[in-house]
Image (tube, rainbow, N blue to C red; front, side):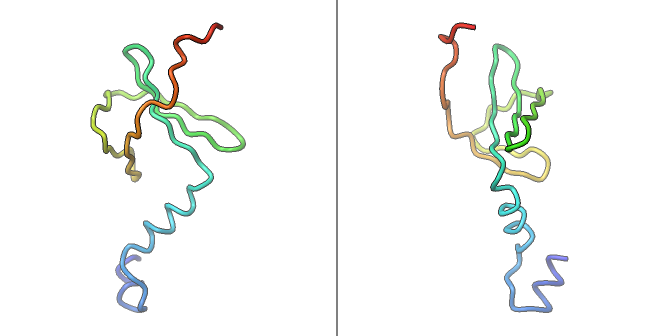
Length: 83
């Protein structure tokens, strides 16, 4: 489809990737480290979804499915918060 749009119109190649990135602006993605486990968390208005990762991600740039991410570092350390 991307190639057809590029050949048949003056639209640049890569349009589907741009559209997918716009479609996901309502989502927030987090990589959560908890002891020896790592979770990938997606937050939207209606729900929070988390999945434990089978392999630990150590690279600054990584991909999950069709999405590419950059690890921006620690947001907050919740170790000191009492339950």
